[in-house]
Length: 250
Image (cartoon, rainbow, N blue to C red):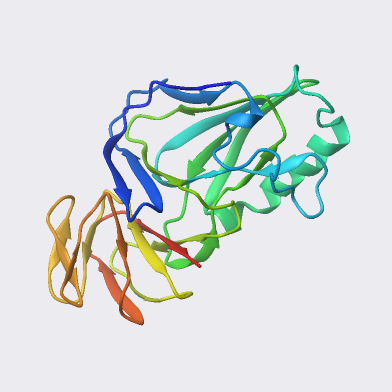
């Protein structure tokens, strides 16, 4: 029961003992993160959360924000007790394809065997849109892997600490090049996740990669997760590609 990783993560940070965030912005193609047991999912295995209508589909304990590029996701349940059936996987594939607009990603290159499933997630949101949900459901399987497919893949990983899978909500916004969006604070505790190779202008300052921008006097830089204190924030994307903003709240 272990997690194996060759993805190059940078800017790892513990946020208020509630999250560990990591960013992969230049990891080589083919690098991976995988687990060999469903118990390795970072929330209680015994209290794992199943999808409300799909059999043998569970909620993961880690959330990913894919800002650019593509990842290959694979699952293997050959050693799983009570594994997903063919009809379970039929329903799951239909689900992820129908949810493309909700996840802000395209599903490509689906490959199935009786004991496995593999497909690609490709970042595709170039318009201003949101909030939409992140990819959070997966087949109940002992083996799962995320592999960097494309050069230039830019993504964030959020690991929740000491909370069940349902304690925090995770949504995303896409801001097209040249567009402006107002994001309203949600819940009583709310964090903004910045993971974007684009340029973003906040209320008073400019942020380009690691150069801070300022929202209500609080610096917010790329590859960061910051607590939102104000009731909303207005962002303008001055870059040439869509920017991704994540939000975690409860």
